[in-house]
Image (cartoon, rainbow, N blue to C red):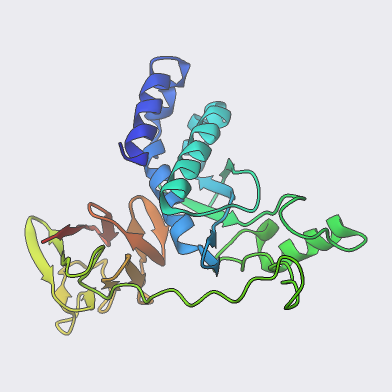
Length: 286
């Protein structure tokens, strides 16, 4: 059973109780769960062959109406979302520097139904060398340099790696060979497996046969969208492992699975909103 399906089943168990009011919110918990998975993927830092570190401390920013509806259940929802992140990391073989925390915050600049996710890699005292004297103050300054409390875009780098023992010393291991290159666009999984990519706009399917696909209002765009809220070159889909979408400096930006963003990882079924147009991204093997 998939990670998201297990999460949905846990929510179904809670919805029969007082937690049911959470579903009156414009922002659905499943949308936030998908955004946390993308946050892990987009901020993964490869340390070595055996270890890929992802954020463990998350802030979900909500509009005032959404926050007021969800905040009474923030403890339960935070625990469920943290469990989903833990399950997803196990599936992807990600590791953490410390305990997983998911908290909700109110953002005055967000409209109802929109949200933002901020994250950071927050190390526990046992996962890296102790900071020098005045460590807590040093850590706070480092967080301020990276953004609001250490959260933000672009993601902060992973904590410094512990120094490796010198050659011949106990615990020294020869440097691991580099990992093989990831499969290129159009492939996924085992050798020879082909992945088809396409998008659906108002019931019309547009096949993605090249590594990049530009969407916009201009006749020069690969897929032209006749929508006054869409810029001439609005955004670009890049197929690969994983596929991504990138805003190209558009006026109104892009919303992916309910989250206003400039770049996001795409999965089969991802919903992209540009202007007043909804685009569904699809991919399948074969």
